[in-house]
Length: 433
Ligand code: PLP
Image 1 (tube, rainbow, N blue to C red):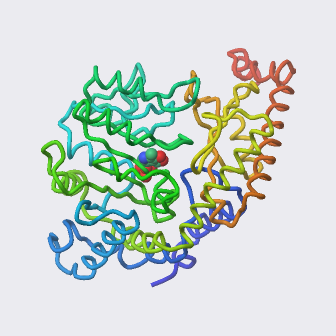
Image 2 (image 1 turned 90 degrees about the horizontal axis):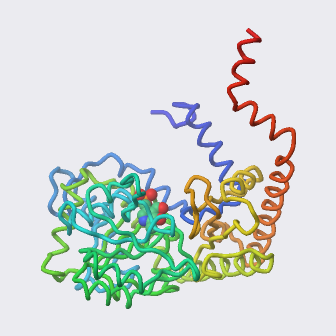
């Protein structure tokens, strides 16, 4: 049996190139991180070979004594890492990732076409929270359930809880979803709980982006107010790619969440769990209980604060005016450029971040902002000083983007580019034959 270099030099070479890219670049994508060597070892282990459909002690295959031990340990660590009482909360650590975890919750507690409300994607929500456009139901969530997204107050960049309340009273959702992919502030869980109670809805928090911050208690605790909490495991939590669903053990609105959710994961939507991921997750959740992890998460937030302050000093407009967590959302529209061009130019300089829609945007393909996150470079040892320098680098990239736009507009090159795209150019093609 050969190692990868011998067995498949082609794949080895691609991995090496990606490793080089990760090593070289300023990794500022808010949903990414660098997991530990220990987690990678578990993920690359023999655990990947085993089938173990079912839950610990109740499997459909033999040979699961060690897998049972592992999954039970992972569950116990998950409960401990998020400081919840195992008498009141249970967890399923089998979801393959964040989107499946969310869909598993929906199918567990809703009937097809029941109503739900999540934060709209152009305002920072995630696809899996029910995204749809006026023309198309884009996400499976909006195809199989009736979605009525809530939005931000565009003047403040904060969730418009008053509008959420009014809409919920009219729409009567069975589920309200807190959580986001591009929201720089905490959610007001007490307010959302009140709204959910007023309309008889479940309240779920998708803490994917901030689960590391929640484990380290550097942001508000969703477990105090929510019935269900889902998460990915590979973002601020710094684990392997995967998902988890936490649920209250006592019935909520007459539903036994424990059996409904466990059954929705398997056999409802998944088959065999990815035991190598569960192994990596167990390692991550042990680390998440350590003082170093808490110090790391504090740095994630203070580094993001330093980045935000410097960007504000440089004159940038941040959605909501700043950040309480690990990300900032920069509105580039006042400068007359879009996030797509800035992302491209910054990428050329190995500064990796992503274009992002900002409230009021017309197009999702050419959105007006960029999202910048601090978790990954904090893992790489950056402090507030380096993050202030990162803001300066981004500023340079934005200046270059502006300059490029200025050079091209009104130039012969722009005319030429229009010509290349026109039917006349294809005629020229024929002439040259
Ligand atoms: N939930 C939120 C809030 C996210 O930001 C994401 C991913 O970015 C997900 C769920 C989905 O996770 P995955 O990509 O693992 O399906």
